[in-house]
Length: 45
Image 1: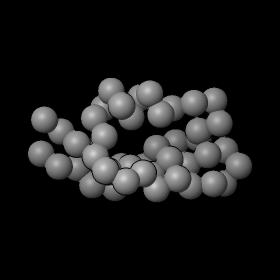
Image 2: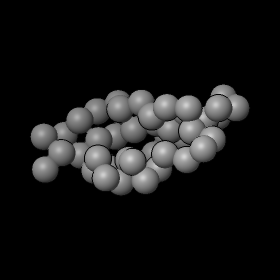
Image 3: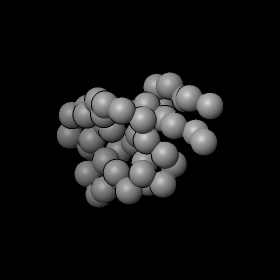
Image 4: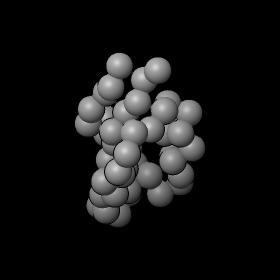
């Protein structure tokens, strides 16, 4: 299973550093209207 450590970058310049590991499905659920992009920092295989 893959786990991703991510940062959520918002349109207004805020960055949320998420603690823990997220699956691809969980990452897609973090994507909201105010999210510009998600940066994957680390990938655990």
